[in-house]
Length: 208
Image (cartoon, rainbow, N blue to C red; front, side, top):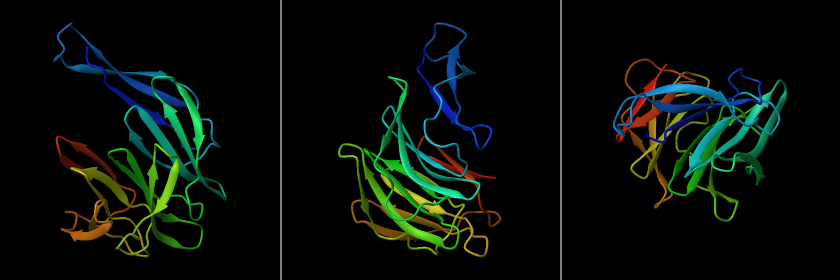
């Protein structure tokens, strides 16, 4: 049986509950199709919030930033999927924010952009899991924005779309070895914000 799990945090927007989609097979064949089967897991231990970001490193999941009514957050929480508990980690530098983006590359997590209540942001930070520290990296090279979309593929990170006063469809690539941004081909289709992205077999998909 394949060991495949997906995690959904705050299904009701401002919620601290977390549920797990655990893959279940209909046979003993390791290559057989899986059926999603949801069950409740351990409650998120930070403040209830919406518009947070998340990334994963190994079997650890991280939730950062977000908003609850008029309050914004910059705290970082780590969830151990094997030990099933939450641990608060070092706060994100910079201002508290919502509608940011995040992705991971190797053993590092990255968080940037977003909205602090008055400014559309473009600062960008790297989280080191081993030392529980953040480092400011090269600012996002596009315009300051929120509700962008982000993902990582083959050791590079990508941020695109979002809202900077206008809706956007540009796409930028981040190279952590050079700490540098490069503009790439714009996203196809309409300009958009608050989209979602996923990666399958080295191919990235953006939708909604």
